[in-house]
Length: 82
Image 1 (tube, rainbow, N blue to C red):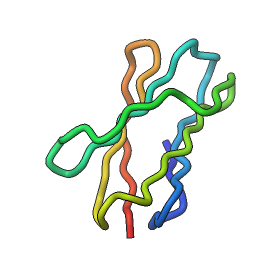
Image 2 (cartoon, helix red, strand yellow):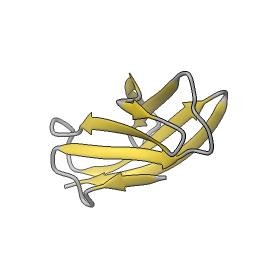
Image 3 (cartoon, helix red, strand yellow):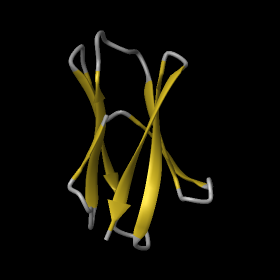
């Protein structure tokens, strides 16, 4: 799992390394209270990695969590918005 830049001000690149190609990969963004803020499909996915470009520019400063779902498997990470 990765998210950069750290801390983020606008666009955040979020992703994970893959061991195969997935048909559909979703990104969900949550605040610290667990409220879902956004859902989007992958910007890029191949057998090596899945990558999303998320615009965090309108979010207030704080810590945010993301979940990447592929083939019913979920991976969670976080990023910081300055």
